[in-house]
Image 1 (cartoon, helix red, strand yellow):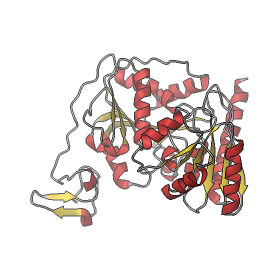
Image 2: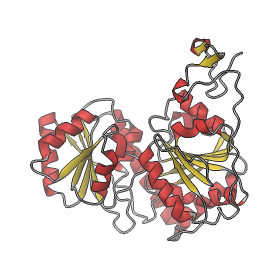
Image 3: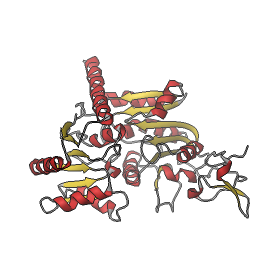
Image 4: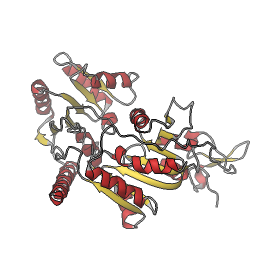
Length: 387
């Protein structure tokens, strides 16, 4: 049976015979590949000193235990690192990364969004001062090889059969979630072990757990040991929600991220509210997206209207969050948890406010609140065991 060597497609409807041979159209967005091609792993060496890790602050005992469990279990099977938002997933995998690098084995850290790639690459340069850290994402792929490769999941097609350790962060997020081609390209890039790192376990990961194909390492508590912020629910018609949004912004003493479902809504709210507030906006295809995000992080704006482009991986100290739900079926449980998880992440300022403004309750909101409550109960139980 014919099979694409890159995306593993076997559906004959996607095969096309061109002048040079038969190629796969299912993954053609990653450049054309012939079925007869033998994908070769790129050759590059790891610096012997690359595995020297340096923390600027110590891990908590809970993080240290999770890091040890990850390091031990990855020797025998893949690992699901299941941690609440802000628990320090990146710091937890450092020991495992250092172990692989010290043995001159190839590693990569892959995540969906380029903003997070850039932020993580900066953090790894501090954590691994003697390693060559490379960030690879769309429009920034001139240099592709280093001791630590941090890339978007889309860029993994450049690395067939390459990594002894592949860390897949936020595998339940768009665009990786539900994309068979991206998933198969990621599996083809990993010739060794995989760490699935996430705050929200989806159906696919649950199935892997049931089949005992991965070992779960969980951490339900943040470094400051404070509980996750449970959102306050405000229900009503659209006009009422806009009035309540105005009043919440007016009384807020913190920076605020207002998550909305679309670019159109972000722009509408910006033009509606900017005569009254110092605010900005961001969405995925905004030309000045990075500049708008940086200006908000530099506290040049009090409020930012954002699509889910800010829902994961990015930390802004001391913010509160409002999720405005004006359309059904846009935000699922995982998205809600991630958006609300922007609140209370700062070790020195673990407080903040979280709101969901919605025209009606739905199962996703109920499940989100239930999961946050369950995580807080697990965290409390963990703290009690320690005293």
